[in-house]
Amino acid sequence: MCCKCHLADLLGDIRFLCEEALDRIFSYADHQYKKLPPKIKIGRNDPCPCGSGKKYKHCCMNKPQSPLDQIESEQERRKWLERYPQASSARQNGQICLQDYYDSESIEIDKILYLALKPREIPLWHREPEEKSAGRQKAYLWQAYTLFLERMKKEGSISLEEYDRRFSIHYMSLDWLNTLCVHLNHSGEKDRLKDVMDCIEKFG
Image 1 (cartoon, helix red, strand yellow):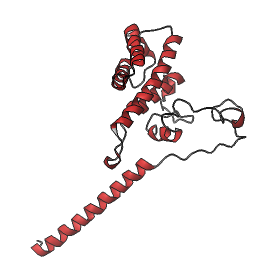
Image 2 (tube, helix red, strand yellow):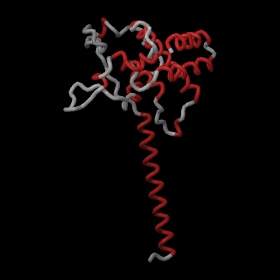
Image 3 (cartoon, helix red, strand yellow):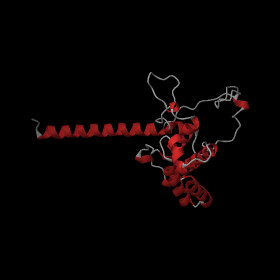
Image 4 (cartoon, helix red, strand yellow):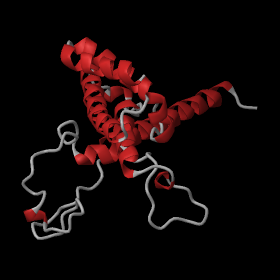
């Protein structure tokens, strides 16, 4: 049995250990949030990462930013896509990958929707303003919508239900289209809002 004086000392030690453990947890969470994947430096004469086979200086080096780069940098996107199912060139026996069932266009649109809609694990002390997160979500959803329309035209204006059956991976089209409408209505973008609503009415 522990006397009262020893119990007080013990409680003090426990409190110190708990505070130390919490400090380590907060420090780790802070580090994980702030870290970015290493930036890959591409030389002027290196093969272009787009896969064209040309040298970087003769291909993408001087091209304007892509629509996605205007939302977040490639490093940021890679950070938030770390838990997205990755394609594997050297897979283990029995391993199943997204590309076994979906083509590259479907996966690309799904990645953009993932960046828009997947809740981000951000420490409480780093909470970003709601306007910023809403603006980012709207921008990603609009980019997904642009690619979605191109796919619909290519497939001959199929219904949303048929599109989901064939191409949707994690997100049903009507759900994210309605979310996009909410953002566009909130930001007062009437022309874009009408465009999306017409799309829903036409293909829904």
